Length: 157
Image (cartoon, rainbow, N blue to C red; front, side, top):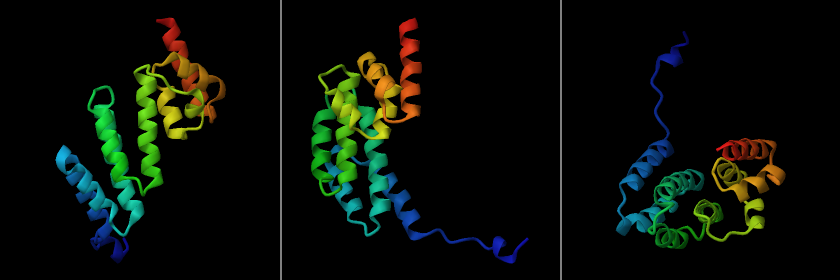
């Protein structure tokens, strides 16, 4: 055993801040959520900050997805994340996923132009029109196969 292996390693400061941000974001109320996101996004380590915020966005969007609180929440967060193209895109993609899920109007080209993340998430969902599109021309083989498998499951029921 190497002598250095036995010494406890000090955890990097950005790891500690990341965990602290996730904890604060999880406990955030509607009234302080936008201010807290702005505080997190002011962190000098933008990769870490955006990672914490995207985890929060994903959790909250999934919780609010089918209810009426989603749209005002998404509008507030779009304002808070406007300086971060990745976060803005993630919110836009959650809104597209919501439209597909709830069978609201959506554009097939918007789905085809979306990230692999959204295409795969949609391929695992239940909108038959979206599954047919992704089964035929989804961006990756994994997306196409997931959509085909899900489409076959749905046609059996």
